[in-house]
Image 1: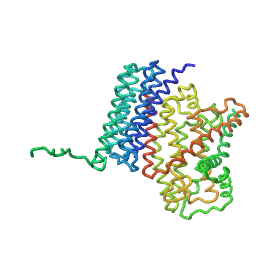
Image 2: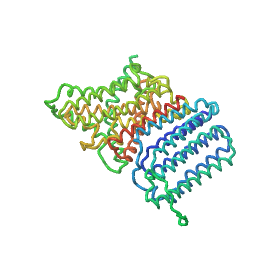
Image 3: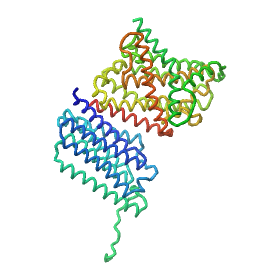
Image 4: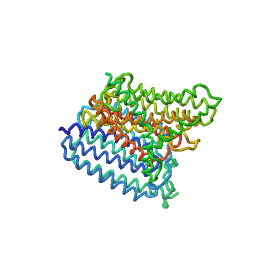
Length: 229
Length: 314
C-alpha cells in the first residue's frame, strides 16, 4: 500500500492545525494559554518537518524537526518561565484591543490573502508540502497582526516567535535541503531572542510594575549622572 | 422498492424509539465522569411516560401557534431522518427528496416554531429564551453554510449518502485537512445547536441563564412530552449526521437484507455511544460561556470551517 498520499495528507493536516493555532494565539486570554498554544504550534511544525522528511526523502528535515522540538517546546518555555515567571502564571485576563470576533475575521482575511498571494508561486512546492507555503505565510501575517493588537509584553514575545514558526513552516517545504547549519543558526537566534526579550520584559516589570506596553507612550532618557547640564 | 420504503420507515422508528435513550446515555456518561451516581439511562422514558399521563394546562393568552408548535417540533426531526443514512450505507426510498441543506432548513423550521410559541405565551422568560436561541441560531447559520459548501466542494454533492462514501475512499482522504477541520467545526455546531455545555447548560434550571430550555417552560403534560421528545430526536439526528455522514459510514448495512439492517442498529448505537462519551468529557471539562462570548465560540467554529474550505479550494 502506498504511504505517500497518506503522509502528504497528514502533513496537510498538520498545516491546517497550525493555521488554527495561529488564530488561537490572536484570541486566547491567559498568558499561560498563549504559551501552551505556542508549544502546540511548534509541535505541529516539527511533525510537519518529520512528515516532509518521509515524503521528500530528505533526512536533514528530521534533524530540523528534532531541533524545533528541543528549542521551541522545551528550551523557550523554560527560559520564559525562568525570566518572567510572575507574568506567565498571572491569572488575569489579557486586554483585547480589537474584539475577538473582529480579530478572527481580520485573521481570516489575512489567511485568505496569504493563499491568494502564494498560489501563483505554487509551482515551487508542487505535490508534497503544497499547504506549507500558504499556511506558513498566513502564520507569519497572523503573527504580525497578533503582535499589533496585543498590548502586553509576554504575548508579544510569543507572537514574534509564532511569526518565526510561520516562516519556518513555509521554509521547510520551499527549501527542504537547506544546509543544516542555517537551520541551527536560526534556532539559536530564536533562543537568544527569547532570552533577550524575556530579560527586557523582566526589567520592564521591575521598573514600571507592569508589562502593559500600551502605557509606554514616550521615550525618555535617564539623565546621566556625569552629564554637564 | 417495498423493502427500501420499509427500511426507511424502520430507521424513523429506530430514531423515534432510541432518541430518549441517547439523552439518558449522555447524562449517564457525565455522571460517571464526574463520579456521581445519577439517574438510570432509561430515566428519559419514565419522564415521557409520566408527562403523557398528566393533564395539560394552556394559557388563555395563547393562540393556536402555541398548540401547534409541539407537533412541529416533534415531527421535523422525523422528516430529516428520512433523508439521512441512519442504518444503511446505500440510499433508501426518500434519500433524494432533499439534501443536507434541505435537512438543515427542516430542522430550523422546528426551531422557529418553538421560538414563536415561546413568544406567544405571556411568560416573560419565553421571549428571552426565544431571542437567545435565535441569536445562537443566526451565529451558527454561516458556519452551517460554510460546512455545506466545503462538503459540496469535496464530495461533489450534498446528498448525505454520497458524501459519506467520499471519506472512506482512502486513508489519505480521511485525514485530509478539509475533512478533519470540518469535523471540528461541526462538533462545535452540534454543541451550539443542541444546547450543550459551553453554549448552554442542558441541566441548568436557573431561568435567567437558560437559553434552550426556557422556550418550553409554559408547556405541560403531553405537549411538554412531545417537545422534550422532539428535542431529543433533533439531538440524535445531529449526532447521526455527524457520525454516519461526516465521520464514517462504518458499521452501516451494505446489503439489502433485513437481518443486516437490524444488525446495524447495535453497531451504529456503539458509534453513537462512543461519541456521547467524548461529548461527556467535553461537557465535564468546560464551563458555560457568558452570553456575549457565544459569538466568540461560534466565530471560532466559523474560522475553522473557512480554514477547512480554504485548504481544499486553493
